[in-house]
Length: 67
Image (tube, rainbow, N blue to C red):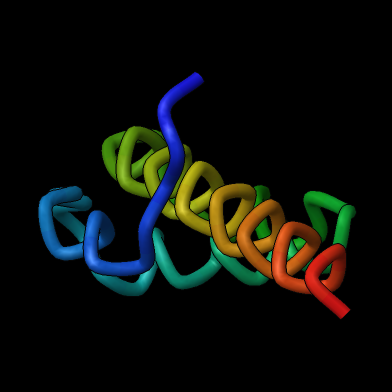
């Protein structure tokens, strides 16, 4: 897997911002609590947000190894 850099987020297009934010929050919480609130037509944006949240978490975990 290629190394993820925070700058890479700007190249991810999510579509519906509110749905993507819910995906990010759910990803960082480790539970899909907000998924049911996302309309089916915006589910791809939710999934993109979830991916961003996962990448952020992995980045933070990698940062912790440096200390």
